[in-house]
Amino acid sequence: MPEPGISIGQVAKAAGVHVETIRFYERRGLILQPEKPLYGMRRYPPEIVARIRFIKHAQLLGFTLREVRELLGLRIDSPDTCAEMQRRAKGKLAKVQEKILALRTMETVLESLVHACEQQDLVHPACPILQVMDENE
Image (cartoon, rainbow, N blue to C red; front, top):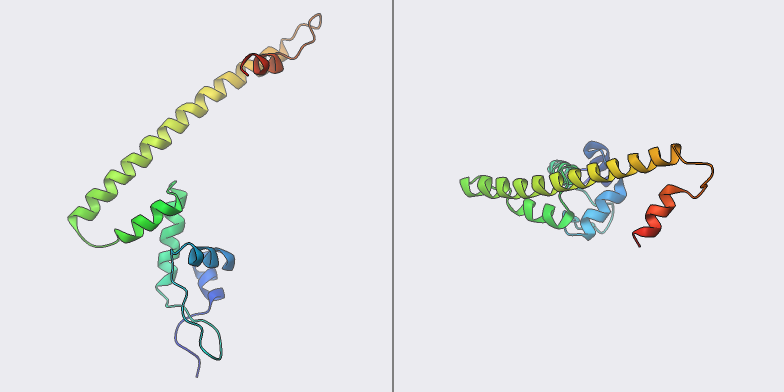
């Protein structure tokens, strides 16, 4: 009779990840690796799929694996949990907004450099982009 639970391959398929991702999460302590029986293969509880999906969704929202580990610890039904999650999400949102602002600034500078290149004077063949980079060493 087969052991209860599902194989790592079935977990990976159900969670939409690779087997190596599951092994990586195990090494990082995000999910527990089931005991290996004397004969046969490890079997995972079906609820591990939801945990892996939670981890992936948190990563897509920009949370680091260290932060995800902390979030996993908060997964309890309590008014304090929701407030703490909101505090963390606001912090992550602020960081994302800072990155967006920095990327917009980079975009503006790069657009002007590309435009300067397109308008380059053939009498002065030096590349304007390289000149700006040399100036900012």
